[in-house]
Image (cartoon, rainbow, N blue to C red; front, side):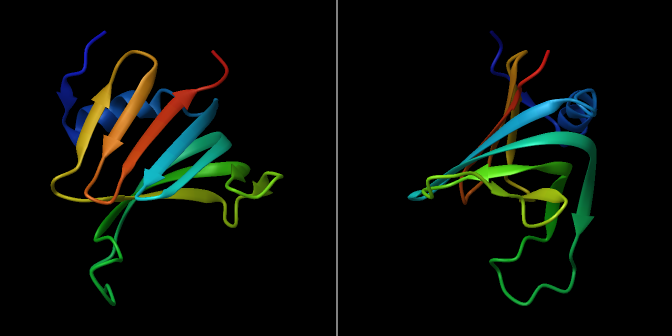
Length: 117
């Protein structure tokens, strides 16, 4: 199992291969943990040069598709939009261990796992 870091280009190339599949995204930010299950239709990136504050990311990975999110509430809720956004930073670290992607930012850690193989 390799835990080498990937470039954002390598990360993108590998993640693109999961388009059309069901994935689980686990997010851990401070005391906030949630899990999202979604049918991944496509992957895109956004650049926001008109940020209002430092909390808004300059760059973001958008996982486009439909799905549900599980938080502390008892029942899963539908995603509020047709994509799941992960903020990216110049210092973000990207890993892949043949079955799971890890994306580590200053805000938190995101794991992307394939559900149907």
